[in-house]
Length: 202
Image (cartoon, rainbow, N blue to C red):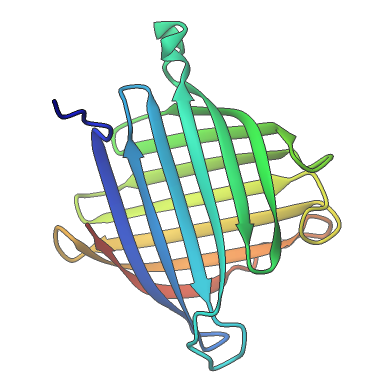
């Protein structure tokens, strides 16, 4: 008897370039539906540390396991109990626990709100929003805004912003332009660093 543990899965390989810093980067991003109500998502960013260096010798990654609350009550299917593990070369590992709410406001939209009130480090709660919009079969965009209430990275509260415009060249290949910014929250001004690259889907 064969038991199918994964119902659906996806993986993107994303080679890219920071033109301001002249360093290469690459992201592996993917997810899977393990059952009708249990899903996993993760990514890992690899990058160089020195200007003009293409050695991908450092990394940062996240893995998220999400259990839909539809198993408790069908009306709660938009909510998921979630555990997320974060860490990397320059970061102490941290695990957060909370809820994620997923919805769509109109055609082509996907929106998620994330709140992690509990973490393995004191006072490191996090709140996030993800907002994406498909404008056509080929053209789409998204925004990620994370607010960290603790002192995990900078010794004080922090903000991460990521914006993307993507254009699909075909079924498995797309070009993208992103802006990424990770800074302390106090005095934050939006000024993302551009990242240009390609997504190859499997």
